[in-house]
Image (cartoon, rainbow, N blue to C red; front, side, top):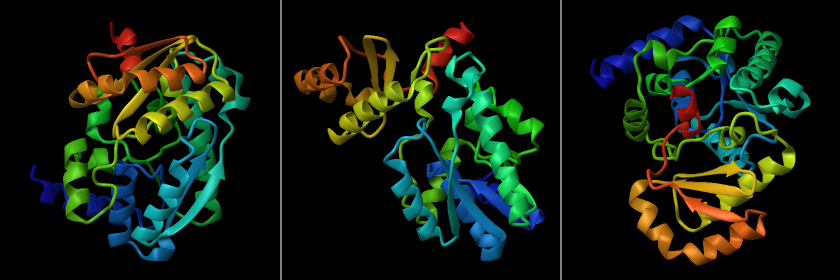
Length: 268
């Protein structure tokens, strides 16, 4: 199916919802979904909601506000409290389920308060390659995934976002900070903050796609493969900064960045 056909199908799907709340992280995927909602539904029938917590990269909220304003929709910020849930903090392999269960439950309540008929989230077909227990919560609570329904993958989203002039078209992939912590390692606010600070620092050096995977006193850095030689040139500064943040051993993943690399042990 060509991209225009997928777009037409996506518009029909969204139009059928009549009104909607969009779970809006501010990333590429949710920005495109929100943009298409704005193209086919009246402004008073759309609400973008960003959930902020210790697991959300702190610098992303301002970017989400700017994007929502750029798209021209109502925007609301809520707080979620994953760290109050002992099951989430214990970090089992289904950790994402507990996070999404809380998030989607809150979004449903807000949608009802605003008399909106549906709650949408921005998963796409490329996400199916990764382990996503949060999808169980999505199915249980009947959250809709129109990008999946319309057949969009990540490359489709990037191409259409660029065509529509969205500033997010080439934005690096976003993910919950807890996804940097191996299953079974307890999640704490301090640890999430340390990871966030490390990634902000690495991004400040000009690396666009960055993940810092945490292993107690050791960290594993992922950047795009093409950026590995450039990172090695900045090796000394990186080592010093990450040691200042509490890491004893600084390692570089020679495979480069890949989505959900901590889930590879589950697959194996």
